Image (cartoon, helix red, strand yellow):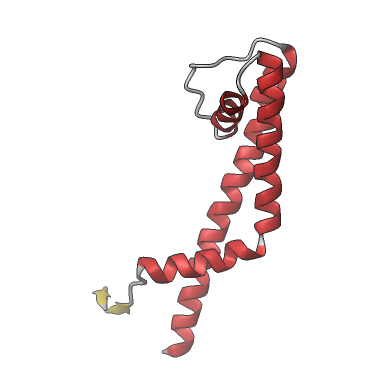
Amino acid sequence: MEKEDGLEIELIGFRTFLHEFLRVLYYVKSILLGLFTLIVIFGVVLAFQESLKIGNGIYFAFISAFTVGYGDITPTTPVSKFLCALVLPLLGMTLSGIMVAAAMQAISRLYQERGKKL
């Protein structure tokens, strides 16, 4: 227990957080799987549009989805530009947002359980 301004704060361990986080992810697994699948499908489309290997197309899709954009592969066709500039970043932001929301929900649940025990 740590004391901060007269309050006792019980820290939650990483294993406890990870366990609760995975429990929360279980409830949204179909959404996450759907988003992941869409990104992979668009990666295959990018591979055919840009004459890339399938693995490179999927890599390109994930790099575009998470708005990293290393620049090692750039879109040249209008379809690829549309996917990389609009569709994939929206999917990636949605996926990231759900992961952050799940982490916050896990933390909230753990501290609510701790509050009930006190």
